[in-house]
Image (cartoon, rainbow, N blue to C red; front, side, top):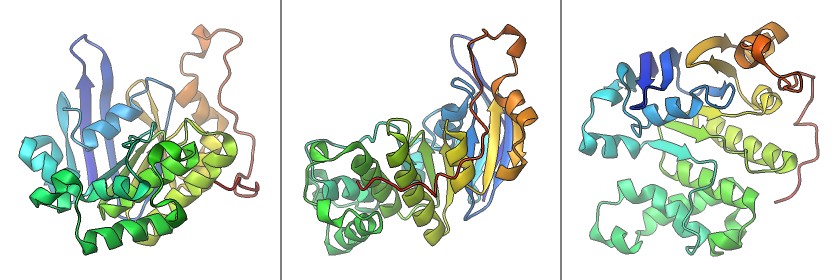
Length: 271
């Protein structure tokens, strides 16, 4: 369903964000993309969403070449690409329900959408999406009155309201404490599995990635250095992903822990 072939991104200042990325993913997979800051994880997701034009390579999503699309075609394609941002990207003054309805803008071609008017069908989809992340009781509450965990769950509801072919989540729990991170990852993985939608999640928390995803892709220096099952992530592979320059590292720099830890076993905080 998703084919990324020899993707390369070089920024105007000469920075090589992606050297050569090739991956294949199928409908229904939940994949964590891990790596150090600056490894190219966010650039990869932005390329798939058409927000970043690659220097070379191809991205094929459900048979369509994202990298060859013009702006109009990209707008249509993004109707079916759910994107979850680290900082929520909600309209703070609008209610949670209206924020979820913005995920339907690409499906609502009437002029009424300019004033956030959506017919009953769109509203039913949005309400059902909020219900699936246990936020129906917050539907009419303004986004700026929600907790961080609630905001991110609204963002998940907005993404699934698009009825997407793929969900891209860029560090969705980076702004949350550990207990809230568990709840948000649990909700995201559950709705993705219920809908059978391909989901790619950029995440720094390796233990969370192992707990909630089916497959890990490790990126270092703009290249894939691991692509496999979570239980295949050994210390040696972690070294290649996070400590490829260990000889240059300062003594106090530490690699993310691989100590076994069951996040699912923790009692999640109610949010």
